[in-house]
Amino acid sequence: MVDHINFAGVALAPDATVVDLVNVVPAGLEPLAALKHLRELRLVQTNPHRVPLTLPFDLAPLANLRDLETVALPKLPVRDLNGLAGLQRLQEIDVSATLVEDLEPLRRCRDLRVVRVRDTKVEHLDPLEELKRLATLDVAHTRVTDLAPLRNLPSLECLDLEGTAVADLSPLGALHALSTLHLGRTRVRDLAPLQRLSRLHRLDLTGTSIDPGELTRLRNAVPGIAIVGAP
Image (cartoon, rainbow, N blue to C red; front, side, top):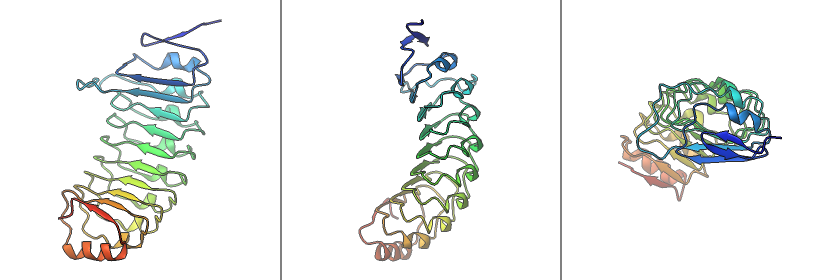
């Protein structure tokens, strides 16, 4: 019986449920395929000298880890999410600052609560339109412009759109659970759709050009809202 599994120089127990490592850059994820009970995988990079994103990083070794709930691989050379497509228990994914462009493999991950894809080339949010449990979505500094796929996500509480070319907020008008919204450096001008969101308590408008009248109407409609970076 194998007493440990070597992963990027780190000895892991075969029955490990959590792999949480900092500044470890493995050649691949193949050794993790043997961790049949793995629930949380976090490979966090804090080194300012980032990993070269030209290296391939295949998620296929994760495909049969049916207990996986968390996958956090920010700043690693992940190109696609195909290896996660069948993980029905997946609740959180973070592939910020990676090479990911397509979220289609997440369409069947109906238990997802947190999706972080900031600083990627992601453009389309359609694969998320049926994720009814999604509570946190971070698409800051992506190519996202159309929020229509989000209009029927009743659990969405925190949405970060900073640095995108988003202009139309009308799809958010029925997201009554929304409490935190980041719109810094977007093209948004009309805040009227937010006037119906009674739970919205924090709004970031840093670097936007919002008419003062819009701000007054929003404050009147949503008493107690904290607006950061208001012009």
